[in-house]
Amino acid sequence: MQLTLKLATYVAGRKLHWIILLGVLHAPMSFFDTTPIGRIINRFAKDIDAVDSTLPQAFSESLIALITVVATLVILIYGSWFAIIELIPLALLFAFIQVNVFVVRKILIFFTYLYSVFMSHLLDNFVVWIQLHVVRSFRISVKQFKVLVQFEHIMFNNASSMCVIN
Image (cartoon, rainbow, N blue to C red; front, side):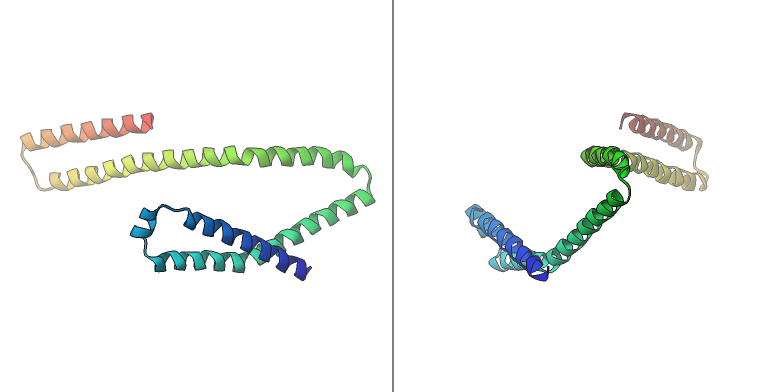
């Protein structure tokens, strides 16, 4: 098993090395004019080192997980033939979930963006509100106070409409 693991790691590392090398060799000359050779070599060596150090462990863990799942299914089916009736719908459910994971991730990214836009406007308005109360504590004139109240009202309406739009 270790020999197969090392061979698979070697083949994958070699293939990735050639892909990276061809990508660098097909880069336009402007890339080499603006990027120092030392930085290119350093990045190249770092990527290859990362592949050589993490790929064997990832292959090993994946193989162990696969063998564990297959052994569990074989023991389950050997113990009870009726388990096949439950395994078929579970396999279909698993396949459905795996296909839709991409869509769910996109939805989560969208909601994260929406939340960050909302919080940005909320925090901006909170800072303005704090600033207005600090200015009010210094007993400003009535005319200045009316201008500040109008500004606060405009900012609140603007932020609430932006939260609804975004």
